[in-house]
Amino acid sequence: MVLPLDPTASAFLFAENRHMPMHVGALQLFERPEGAGDDFVRRLYEDARDVSELNPLFLRRPRRSKRLGGQWIWEPDDQYDPEHHVRHSALPQPGRIRELLELCGRLHSTRLARERPLWEAHVIEGLDDGRVALYTKVHHSLMDGISAVRLIGGVLSEDPAERGMEAAWAASSLARIEARRAAARDDADDGSDGEGSDGDGGRGLLDLPVSVVRSALGISAEAAGMPAALLRTLTKGVLDQTSSISLHAPRTMFNAEITGARRFAAEDWPVERLKAVAHASGTTLNDVVLAMCSGAMRTYLNDLGELPDSSLVAMVPVGLKAKQSHLASGDGGNAVGAVMVRLATDLDDAGDRLSTIHASMQDGKDALASMTPAQIVAMSALGQTPAILTPMLKLQGVVRPPYNLIISNVPGPRDTLYWNGARLTGSYPLSIPINGMALNITCTSYDGNLAFGLTGCRRTVPHLQRLLVHLEDEVAALEKAVGVPGAA
Image (cartoon, rainbow, N blue to C red; front, side, top):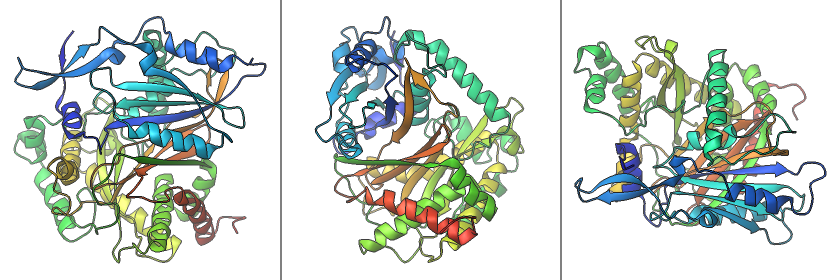
């Protein structure tokens, strides 16, 4: 069956080039089950490769249709090659996490072949602690990063004794994934604030029908009250008070043309440790995450002699529950938007940075809460337009960047999960640097930890792994600044 691509998916294909692969990825680490034999990894790989029936989504490949005037369409691949898409790799000695992250960086650097379905999975052995890794990547036109994380995690089980589980790309996994998504929605309705989330399968920020844009600009009756919200937001942008739109961001080493080579760094921190900082300071977990990134970026750029005098600005996707938007419809769900946050990298004190970030985030969320869900989507798209169009139109150095980096915080599974008895010990996201935005920081929670995945251009962002040390240093600085008991 031939399907036309929606505008968002087409945009990712049009924007892609050899310097800017447009796929998202995930790295998962599994601990072998007790009593696993020497052939455990081989059988794991073969089970992942030889699924009984493939999910049709993973058989789609893109093609431009002459009959439809050059429009991108999806068509099924009738020559699917499982050994191309599911691969078995081994790390060189000594098999440290360093070697694993280096391999993931190289795998993440290569474009997916468009004559095939746009995904790959790599089962990786050779870690010195005996764990097994799974690196997967999926083109953003096929699936967004949040959906990819949920897809991969959705096939896992809370039962360590369960066997016969097929991989995420198997048709048999669809029912399990839908059940877990439903449970996740129930958890959110029971009190999760959704903060930092990109929402649950919400409309893409580029996928805006004319009616939505008109509504957002107050042209139709549905958008009553929007002109005032638009005016307030634009005024804040002009006055350099970031909220939903940023018109002031300093030029940094990140806002440059990138190469295709990637570097990846990853680490996790206990959620309770970060929540203690939030509780002591009267802020939120997401504020603390942003403050960690702020202090780490300040130290990193200062060490390289690249710290600008004015504060860096981050684009932060947020999910607002429908009830938080006063004009939202009553059908539940999340209103998805983006807030432009002043990271306060121009301030010396960690506590001052956290306070400034909290105020900036709150201001942005208040602005979004005054809009309808459709207006939130349109306003967020308006704020992102310069970052999207600049690399597509090759205007780096001509158009000033609207923000310096993207920082996302994605809620993940709270329970310990297993894949055919192998315990998932860590899950780390890999994202998309783009021309003019050479660093992307994405966090996801799992089993009491918050995992940071830092993806950067290998040339534009040197010594990326140093940011992990700076992040830990900033946690300690925040604990001291807000008076967390026991902090050094």
